[in-house]
Image (cartoon, rainbow, N blue to C red; front, side, top):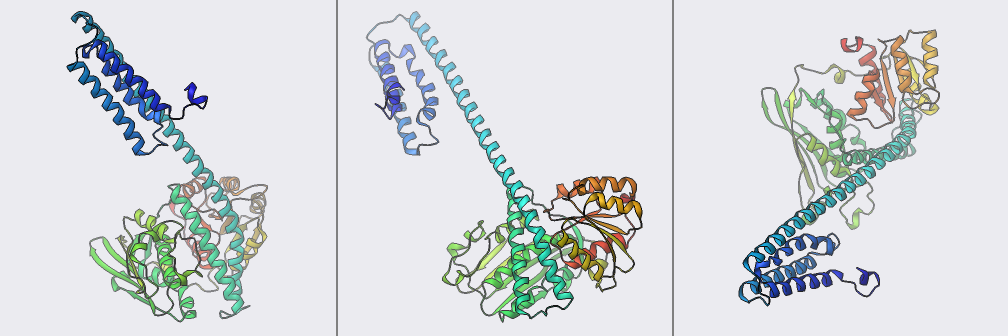
Length: 513
């Protein structure tokens, strides 16, 4: 080690092996096999990975040094058995020497093995802790950034919806279409990155709700028709009659998967058609097996690239795909979501011949025959007679929420922090529902909800947040008093459905208690 520090030797492990092996071979020549000197090769084998630093060395280096040690060990055995020792030793003394060397080598082997395993375990635990800290820091960073990005996006998308609903701009106005496309595209990018972050943190979840499968798919494909018409492509939809039934599943995640597949098909198809098919493969008792198929006549995917497209941040490279943009996370997220649903994504494709993606999900049938929430068609008088308190510190988001709610004929009162909301409720408690942001100055939503529930336990309060919600956070919100949540950005029909659910219907007994 001193020679290595002085820069005279670099490969000190070879010098070490030479010195030890030479010493043991000479000892065997002098004392013979009865001395048990060869046992010291066992602790030496334990030391080899440390001496060579196996984590930074290749397999051949480790094998070479291991071979040197084994050959030296066998040499000692051969010399001890077939060559007469230079110094005769009595049987009694030889037995004592043999036992001492055997016990010493065993103790050294066990001690070095324990030290090696312990050091590796500590090193492994440090690496895991470092990785967890890195993931945790990145999760917090992306969650914060996601909140900050989704807040202004709510204003943009809300303004787009208001422009459309109030006829300031027509659907075919070029500026309107650009604004709508860019805002939707940015929201999808943000959601993909946040979902990928949740996958790495192990927090991506599915939440089962009751919905009509046919109605869900029919409503989900509506936003795509205009995009397909603009590219002069045909969007074909085939839904089995058996799909017109109420089931239990995660409607949001199913739509997310189909949106990713349809968006990719639209992006990589220049002529022909894209077809979405729902085939009911099995219906027994309370179960329904449904196969979802998205088929296109687009670019297709070469055999050698078909496994790569499911990797994160990867897209098939082609001269004609240079104009396509995205995170390359869509299919990776789809895979993970389908794993949570005990399913898998299958691909059939050839270069230039289009692609076919499919997956099968087993659903549990619900007892009801139809879903009034999905089948109800909203009109402009849906919230007539309701008095709603909106608590939101962002003035743009407040304006968007107020315009949407007054458009449905609701009476709206505005509060810009939790303390203002409490003051308003003290003066007049006649409110049907409260929409409350979580992050606000003066008093945030987490503190305000506790005060509201002390005085008005039966008043429905919906969290109005730009945070990306998971089951853990939702459970925490429900525990402190929130009835439900709506994420920003939101579509007007989403807000309408939630308000109708809690303000126009009797509260569940669990909430009343």
